[in-house]
Each structure stands twice: as C-alpha cells, then as structure tokens.
Image 1 (tube, helix red, strand yellow):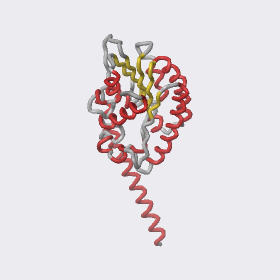
Image 2 (cartoon, helix red, strand yellow):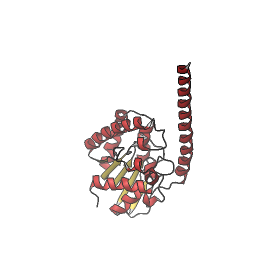
Image 3 (cartoon, helix red, strand yellow):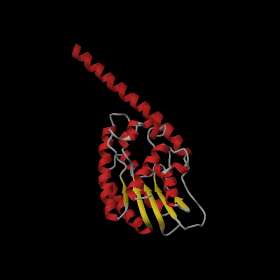
Image 4 (cartoon, helix red, strand yellow):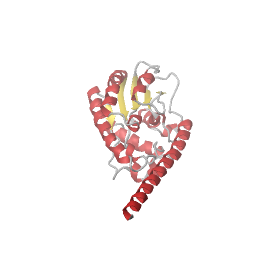
Length: 240
C-alpha cells in the first residue's frame, strides 16, 4: 500500500514538473516572438564600398534581444572594422540549409568581411552535427572565395538558455559540444575563422547571470550578451 502510494506521488510530481516546464517554455516563447518582431538588423546602405561587410545567419545575425542594432555583433563588428557598407540578410529562425537562399540575395560579388551566425537552430532542432556540417561545407567554400575575411559563430551553450526546462539542458550542452567540434574542423578546412563561443557551464556568464546576458525570453543574448560574443570574436580574429 505504501509503495503504491509512493509511486503515485512520484508520478504526480513528475507530471507537475513537466507541466511547469511546458508552461514556462510557452510563456518564454511568446516573449521571444515579440522580440523577433521588434528586432531590426544592423545595415549600412549607400554606395560607399570602401569597407564592405556581409552578414548572414539566424536571429543572432539579426540581433534579436539587443536594445539597438548597433549593439549586435554585426553592429559592433561594423564599427570595429570601420565598415562603410553593410548588407544583412540574416533571418530569424534560419537553419543551415537556409544559408544558400541568403547568399543568393547578396548584391556584391565580394566583401571585405563576412559575418556568419548560423547553427543554433540546428542544435535546438536536435539535428545531427555531421549532417549539418556537410550541408554547410559547399556554402562555406563559396563564402571563403567571396570574403577577404570570413568570421563564423554559431551558439555558445544552448544548454545554458533558461527558456528550456532544466532537465533538457544537459542534453543540449552535449549536442552543442559535438557541433563546436564539427564546425571548428570544417572552418579550418575552408580557411575561415571559427569563433567558439562555448564556456563550461560553471564559468559561463550566460548561465551564471542570465538576467544580464540573456534577453527576457531566456534564449537570445541581450546587448550585454552580444558584447561578450563580439569580445570572443575579437580575440579569435585578432581585431583591435
């Protein structure tokens, strides 16, 4: 009798935990949709092509979660390299296979620098790291020929995003590490700069201080989070 009662109580506790996790996720997801609608990508139009920058990728390329376009990685990089012209074709929700369509929209044949922010949504969707790398390989080959410098970043630690229930986060972290390994190898093969944004959870600022470095949805970086991304980019690429 006692064992049966204990099992029932355990089942109820698990069900309550799952319901709480689902409710929290849906609430954060609704906030995320609002941030996506409000986001404006960093761009510089005109015909001054003295220093050109192309931005491709997903919502981090758009800069979802930042207070202003200038506070995204694209905005910070544009300022850092003195860009006079910036094209931004990043689309929120984009996965690696969508990169080909974005590349077809570019206006110039060659750019002084290309910023690629892609891969996070492939991780969120539990896609295979080797398969994703295989999808990206020919596209990166083309980008390496079209940019003086190509900078690629995907995601730091998706498992540190508070939008996800805590019991899923370790699995996302494990998958994230597989992605970083596959992406780093591919970038080296193609001669482009891969920016590994991963930091172990115990030392990860996003995990330790999500109220500072994550936007209100618990998924996208805040302006402070994008500043950390850019700092890692500068360290990896030797940008002053």
